[in-house]
Structure formats: structure tokens, C-alpha cells
Length: 111
Image 1: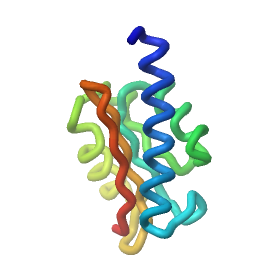
Image 2: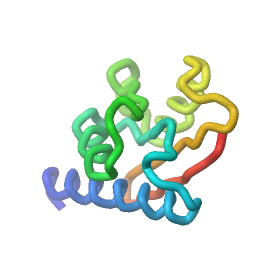
Image 3: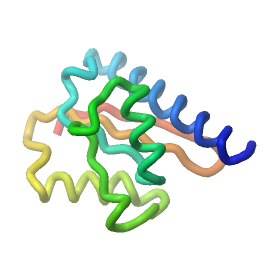
Image 4: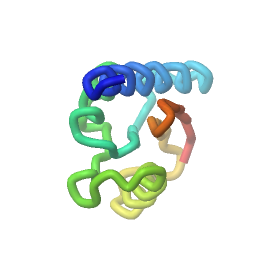
């Protein structure tokens, strides 16, 4: 797969995974307080949010500060969002990641 194909595949898989995770949790995008995506690059983050139906105001981004930290991006972003007071007890948080080997997954959780 070439770069553009990987980009499209990543966005499609992450957005679809978000929707499946929400459906399995009995939630909708309107129930989500914050999306914490893998911080690969801002283009993938923005496209995933758009395709999943979430406004960027509900998306946590720190790739501009740290770059792509591989498998650490989601837990670091989750901790940072908590420290910044962006999630409170009872908040519905959606996490999603895409990685090497073209693997992906999402999780809806109540903080």
C-alpha cells in the first residue's frame, strides 16, 4: 500500500471502529465528550473526526507538541486531557488507534 492508500485506509478503519465501539456501548456521537485518537498526524486526526461525525471541538490533539509517539499516543493524550480538566468523572470518552501491520481498534469508556 502506498501513502495515500494507507491514509484512506487508516481514516476509514478508525472512523468505522469508532462507530462500532459506540454502537456496542449503546452510545451515539452526541454522547461523546471527547475523542482521543492516535496522534499520527493532524490530517489523519481531522479526517477521522469528520468521517466519524465528531466536531474537532470534541477531539483531543497533542501531536503538535510531541509528534507521533507510536503506541504511547493514546494513553499520553488521555492523561493529558484528564490533567487539563477536559474529562470529568462520568464523561464518555472514545479512543481509537491505527498502527503498524495495518491494525486498528477503538474503545468507548466512561471516565
